[in-house]
Image 1: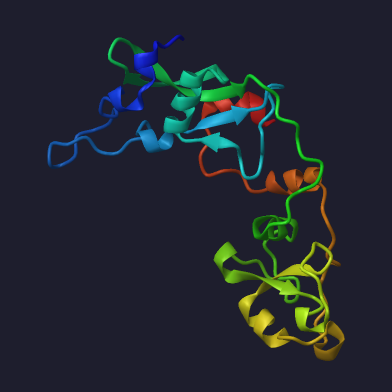
Image 2: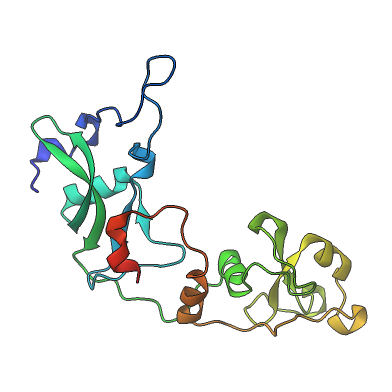
Length: 209
């Protein structure tokens, strides 16, 4: 698929209505082919996903921009078309980067990765929670010299966090169920496999294992 410079202006893209059934007002109802449901899976140049959890996906707009920049190779496509001023083409469902991005050897220390390491369980009461119900907790409080690091941060539900406050574990008899430590990239990826994405396209199967 090749594009002329004038075609690379996304403003000129025309998107036909999604396939679907007519709603009561004569319009077309939402369907699985709506553009919001057409993200592209992004692979590294070695044809492995850049990330498995969260899954490396781009919106259809970012995917099309990357094609225009010639920074990706189209591997698979949806049965959904968009139009430039002079041609029609399918939306990509799988893209591979043309330049390899080296994978990080250590995971980033983020709130999301801490929750992923702890499998979204409070480390004090051992109950599962949704992301918005969890907080960071310093096992050794910052006021007592505790560091904000993998080895001193655990996931905690809000009631447990409030109960523990600025106390040491020994002062309130609240000890983490699992001693906090820095996980490996591999461990986080394996844990992430237990939480499949809410949307996957059939063309992604060969790359997700």
